[in-house]
Length: 56
Image 1 (cartoon, helix red, strand yellow):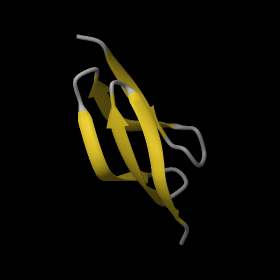
Image 2 (cartoon, one colour; image 1 turned 90 degrees about the vertical axis):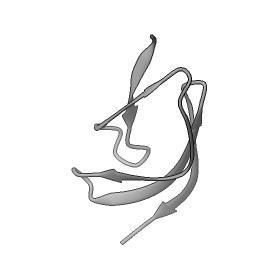
Image 3 (tube, rainbow, N blue to C red; image 1 turned 30 degrees about the vertical axis):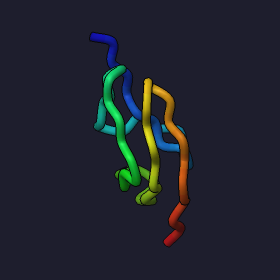
């Protein structure tokens, strides 16, 4: 099965979460431990779309 790491849309570092080709995420709160930012994303067919960047 084809899998890929998710990268932070703010700082570009690799997150500890992997997605597969058949993974679908809707309104997923993606947290980056390095930049300490949370971002809402959608993912389908290994394509990630940023919904909202939440700045602290």
